[in-house]
Length: 293
Image (cartoon, rainbow, N blue to C red; front, side):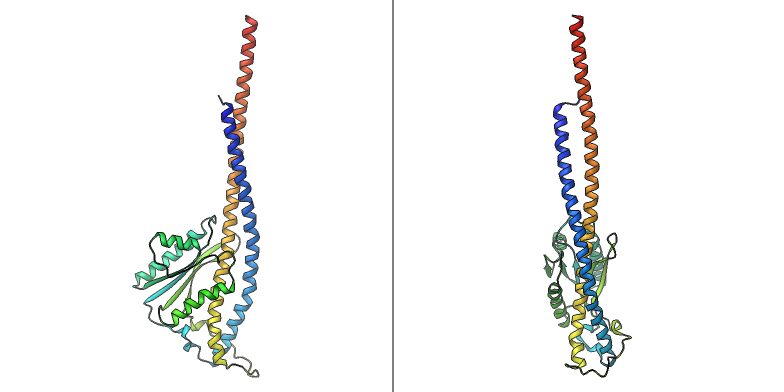
C-alpha cells in the first residue's frame, strides 16, 4: 500500500524534474538565439575572405607568390595541430566528435614519424589532452562562444611566426563545419603551408591602377591576412556548431524531463488511488464491525 511518505517523495521528485525542465528549456532558447548571431557573423566575415582571395589571385598572375614564406613546401618533420573545442559542456557529442578527428590526425602524423605540437582552443579540449598526458604548446580559453577577429589574429601570429622560423613544417586546423542547425561535421584543413594552387586561375588586376605599395609588397602583406581569415572562419563555424549542438542536447533533455515528470505523475496518481481505496475499505470495514456489534 502506498503511504503518505511515498506520495510526498514523488511530489518532491516531480518538482525537481520540472525545475530541471525549466532550466534546460531556457538553455535551449538561449542556444537557439546564439545560433542566429553566430550565423550572422559567418555571413558577415565571408565577403572579406572572398575579396582577399580574389585580390591575391590577381596579384599572383604577375608576381611569384610561391616565394612567400607561408607557401614554402618543405619535408614535413614536425606538425602543429590546432583543435577548436568549446569552453562549456552540455553540448552533446560536439566535443567528442572534434576530438576524435584530432586524435586521428595526430595518430596519422605520428605513424609517418613526425613530431606533434598541439594547440588547443577551448577548456574542454585542454582538459581532454592534459588528462591523457599530451603536452600542449598553447591554449586559448574564453573565445569559443563568440570569437572575434582579434582572437584569430592572436592564434595566427603564433602559428605563422613559428612556421616562418621552420619550427614546424605543417599546420592542421581541426574544427566543426556548420552546415545547418541539424548537421555539423568535424573537419580538418591544412592551414600551412598555403597551397599555391589556391591562387591559380586569377585575372590580372586592372593595369590602370597605381599600387602603393607595390604589387609584390601587397602580396607579401595579404597572404598572412588570408591565413587569418581562414582561422577566423574556423572559429566562427565552430561557434555556430557548438550552439546548435547545445540546442539539440537541451531540447532532448527537456523532452526527457517531460517524460519522466509524466511517468512520476502517473505513479503518484496510482499511489493516491490505492491510498483512497484503502481508506474507504477501512471505513467500510469499521462501519460493518460497529453495525454487527
